[in-house]
Figure (cartoon, rainbow, N blue to C red):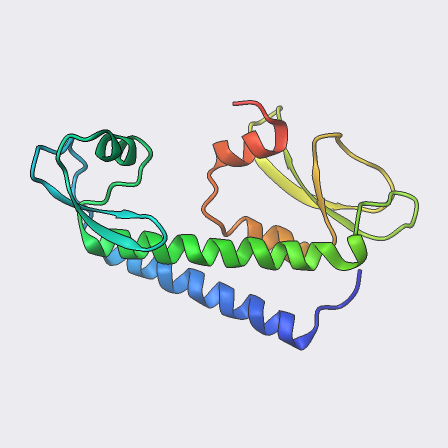
Length: 169
């Protein structure tokens, strides 16, 4: 495993600081109770940017609501947009770190491979390191442990990780 460059370390530190800042902002928001909107209700959605909308019983309104793209306040929508943007940067950083020279997990070279897996025994998402043995066919392998650390800071829930790792709901 190659060492991270100073630029990569700075990028990762910046991402971690942004994650903390957004989580702190989320603690300070007074989230409105989500109720099914009536005609004429103002709301916000995300479509490339945050948009102000008015509910008028159209299919698009209902689709946004059902997809979780309905925010009762502009502050909630802005924070969600910021969080999604940050998660995209995290996933791009992971892809760049993992891509080096078209990296694939080679179990014959004795180098560390970092993995993320779903444990059917206890239902937890687990991670670790192995050198020469594939511990489970469905594990996702990475070239750097920092990829695992960043990935676990993303918006993914336990159920989303389970689906990504096993393709089972």
